[in-house]
Length: 97
Image 1 (cartoon, one colour):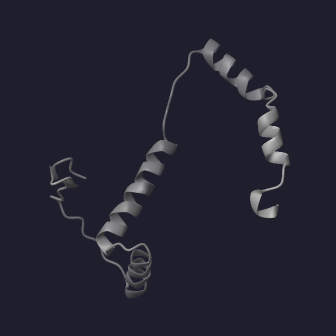
Image 2 (spheres, rainbow, N blue to C red):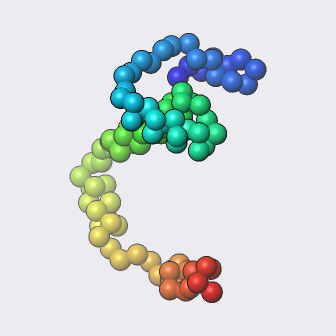
């Protein structure tokens, strides 16, 4: 998406074309209407959200051998005691009270 803005709104300066069958278009239109959006806004939002998720899942970081060993040791060790978290997880949910 473009970073160009007009009156606080991003300017759309490229087209993305795709073909769908009637059932797919109907499903998308119903979902867009449920959120008060038009088809284009709904599809762009959903596509960008999925694209970000895919890219974040592929985040790569490299560690030297010693740092990797420290990292895996931390992952393998038991979590520190957290009484507030324990109380939250063992207490009744607000809707069950």
